[in-house]
Image 1: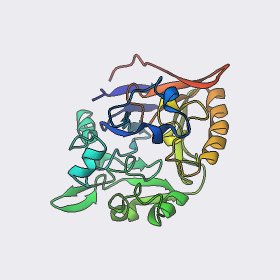
Image 2: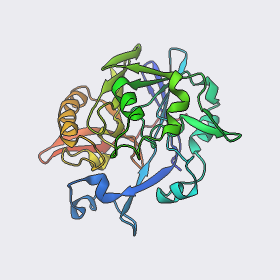
Image 3: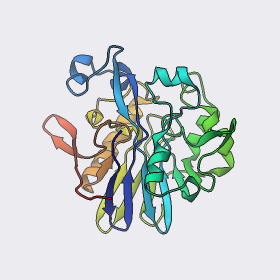
Length: 286
């Protein structure tokens, strides 16, 4: 499992965590891009699956502990874990414990969207009952996302698991559009993968950071056409990418990639062939 990485961004302390890894079909991950192209960037197993990371971020600011994403759901059982190549337990809680953080100390959770691989630890099983994992935390989500998650259709139903949503409905705090959650921390709509997906942006002391959600799930997905087949609205993804890429390039944003299986941090670069992402290795220690 990837070790915890720390970064000081102005007034924010950031810890880049891991909830392990999982595996998804490579063709679905790269959409219309043929395998003879994407296989130059990532390798696949005998089932044509590619390895993906699960990269929540812990932020300390304004005397609060903020968690971006809650990892993947493992509650559905052994068959579910086997399909996605999951270990039995969520490493995320262990990594928080290594930092001396108890779940009840998290005051704010930001779900970029409510798919099972991003909101899976919103709840956990305790003595056979579903309970909030972070019982004192407000969960920030876009109004559109919560509406779609609680009224899924045939194509989205497999990604929105009710066990991660219904038990904490009273903890959700909905926003509509771009919103400043605390000084220097914003949620920004980035529709396409879902209509209600949001990225998270930080700005402090001239430094900028963006958690890209599934707009750019891995660095290999940075080229504009490399859009997942999982995206419900791929042309919206394309337009969102064009808009956000310009913003993130202009502001020299450090980017956090939600599913990068290796080092989760990088920056966008513009080449004669289009956009690419390059890793950024931080020297800071915990």
